[in-house]
Image (cartoon, rainbow, N blue to C red; front, side, top):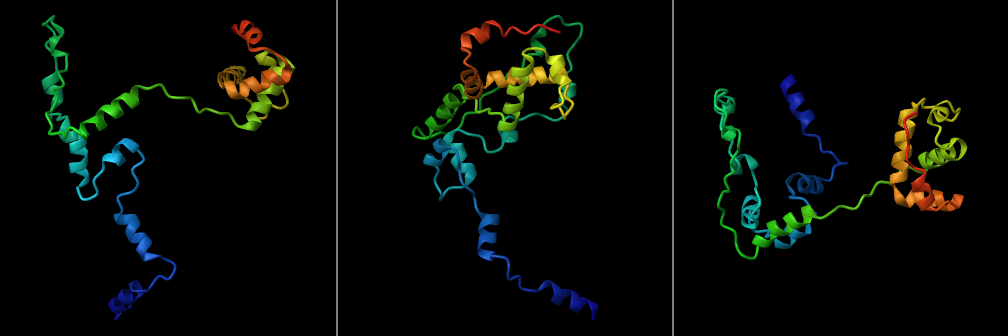
Length: 196
């Protein structure tokens, strides 16, 4: 009797679950955020085939094979002065890549080498606190660490690090300089921090 009751308990219909959305979430492929790959993607082909045609690796363990028991094979001969045993040779694996899709790997390679724009921004409360400390104490970091607004009890080195970070964010630091009427050139001349 207990077995039947347990089975019946499992077969309750869950009204709060959208089963269609749940199925799509589990079995869906997802969105491809890389525009180079999404432009060349063919939905009727498998993921592995698509990536192979683009010159990309689906499984890096198959692409770059590392043999088992590598320690025994890599262990160098100490008596040998030649360091050629330490040199690793990476063999390129030939792949069948169509001419149109060959550009995807090249575009990704070029894109990876481009310089990235820093998107770092400090929270407003931290900017206000650091600007208060700079206005009040100047470069006296030890006095900053003893200030009553330092409720996190940060050390003078930590505060100095945060101020350097604040100065490295040009959008926020320039606003601070403009409000004080200080030019960036004058500030750069006096910004050489010495150890206390």
